[in-house]
Image 1: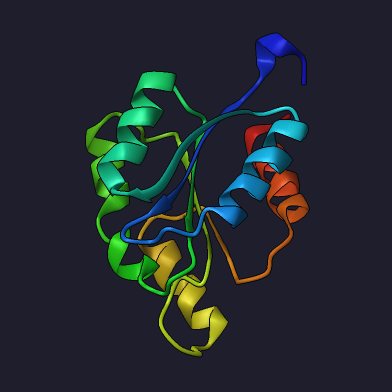
Image 2: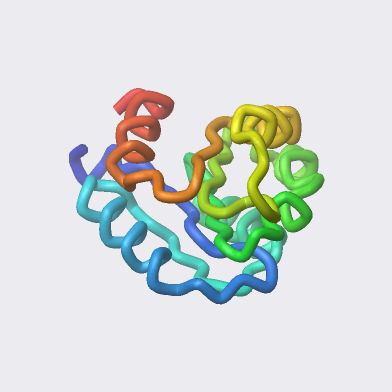
Amino acid sequence: MDQNNKKTLVLGVIGSDCHAVGLKILDNAFNGAGFNVINIGVLSPQEDFINAAVESNADAILVSSLYGQGELDVMGMRDKMNEAGLTDTLLYIGGNVVVGKQNWDEVKERFVKMGFDRVYPPGTSPEVTIRDLKEDLGV
């Protein structure tokens, strides 16, 4: 991607989650793949993701959650994004997004119904997400 066509990603850890190491790995991977990354850090409410996306004219919001409460933390997020004018902004989530061992296909379906474009299980390689971003953003 050349400098003028760099796609902008808002990246952060939602809710009361303070897992910073994985966030740094993702930040480095996405930067290395040529994306402009706005890393809002850990312990971030939905509004921080949305405000950063509006301010930066982001192409995608990537939500990370490792402490199991991601499903609760993101309820209504797509509606809030739409209200903020982010109707075309991609919304991805990954990590340990639910409590306990649940059927992944059912988990994924719930998040898709909430408006997520991509839902990743724990342990997904950043390269998978990078490939999907490039495909979804047409780069």
